[in-house]
Image 1: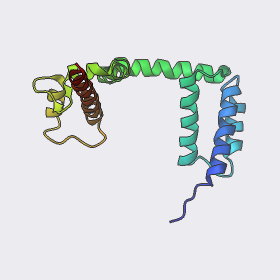
Image 2 (image 1 turned 45 degrees about the horizontal axis):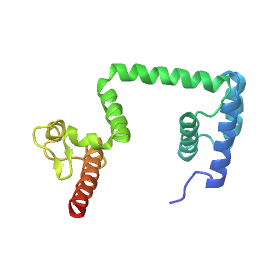
Image 3 (image 1 turned 45 degrees about the vertical axis):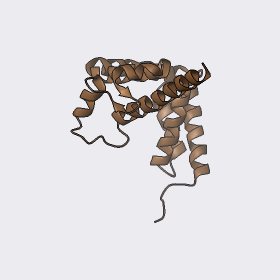
Image 4 (image 1 turned 60 degrees about the vertical axis):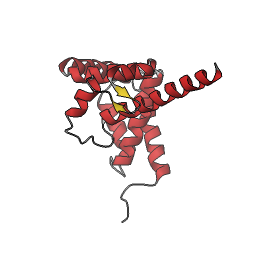
Length: 167
């Protein structure tokens, strides 16, 4: 089956042009909209282009790259919307908080019950797993945290065993 998408090199070039335009635009106005449409006039917007633009935008936002007024305003509004979403959906806040904890103190994941051999009985992880009624979908957030618990727990127990042997 042939793809309707332009070649990878063209996609990257278009994405770079779009990001350059977005990063330097002072205003989100008709001129910006027309300039963006000029870049995609021949191909239109397609999935690979949208993904390349999103990936580059994520890098700009994560890296705190200097951008002009239009993107600065857009990032501020998007951040505000994300915070509003998080307030309206407390579970999202919990997921973000767990992610921060995993990144900053991965050993703490076991305290929530994500152990080396699986969920620890009577813990948050065990209660969460029970919601899946015995079937935890591959790639789910639960499986991600469980994998972290298993990997972290194995590392901790390996280091402890090595230290015992050395003593």
